[in-house]
Length: 482
Image 1 (tube, helix red, strand yellow):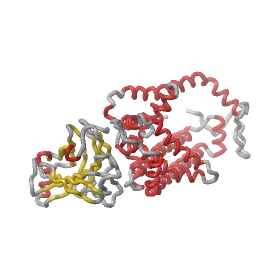
Image 2 (cartoon, rainbow, N blue to C red):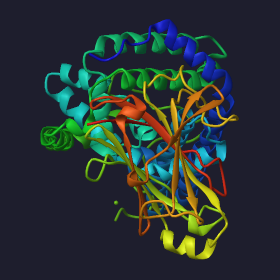
Image 3 (cartoon, rainbow, N blue to C red):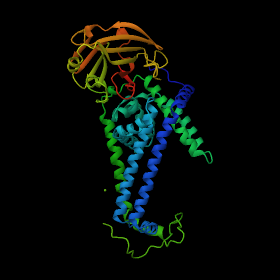
Image 4 (cartoon, one colour):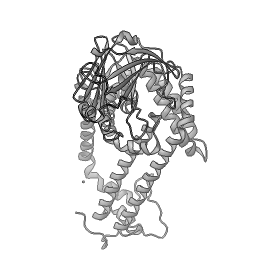
């Protein structure tokens, strides 16, 4: 069994503490996004009216169902841009709610960085839910909630596609009703605030960061207390069959409706125009003549894991962002095997190039690996003094040394136990457990040194010292140990 889930009170309390610190940046991202989306809608409307020949001509075309080709192209382009901006804005808002160190500009950039990943995973999620709804409704409702946290799996744990969708589903196994109750509470709060007269929309907007952080806290609680591991799902083809069903079945339904109702559409439109359909009335536009002329001369005739490789869990770090190009980390990978942790730090260039250029500068810090072995953010120490990220129990410092050759390469690895802001030295890693070859530094740390065992979970991140921009601190990942 996994650890006990947090109570509703604990979730609300933790959410409130984060909300007080992060609400303003999240709201700024949301406000910028809303302005851009509305600007796009406004410009699209102006373009359609312009190409259609003005408001009166547009109204006539709307009734006749007969738009000009340039107006239709403008509408199609505008709607496409509008949808893209909606996905981007939602992604940016989610990204800044997940990463407490992210600035507003970084969040706006992250909206594009994760755009296709969010789009693909979202397609998988909605297709599965659609298939479930078409198969007696209840499966769709069940999957709709159990997989609803897929975007946090993608943004917080760097999972992709079906891995992100299944992560949410697996973490919620056995906790569906508990999660449902927590979601209902926050949804009721949101609805209550939105229904307040006059200022309801403003209250809903201000409540949005709380809602997103609340869901993040629930997700992390599910993740940290779960024994489920995404890569243990061997059979994924049934899920992809559901995705296919969720795409194909609605298309068949639309095709059937078109075949059945298609011949009746002209008559229905005529009935609406003539006011013969009860409950449907055409709006009044002042002095405009809304009658449909038999011939309109000005309308032209109508003519578009990562969990990953060999069991490793990987961070891909952007290259070209360090002060010294020879100390540019491109990838950090970790896995647990045979009761030991195995790390690989891959560089953008070879270590030989660095040592040839550095000659005898002494010890240079390369990277620090921060490990939370009990997966409890309340115990341990901070990453760095100015960081709000805490709960780490050990830190592994990797230094490159041009004066002393250790093992097969020039590296020294020191271990420390963290307690608040204090470091307790635990000694250096044996030379036989440190290997430098080509552009890869490999470390093997016995689990006994860290008090971890197979089947445990490990939360970790790393700090790249040569980072030219930002803090060099990457996002946490929850690593399952084999």
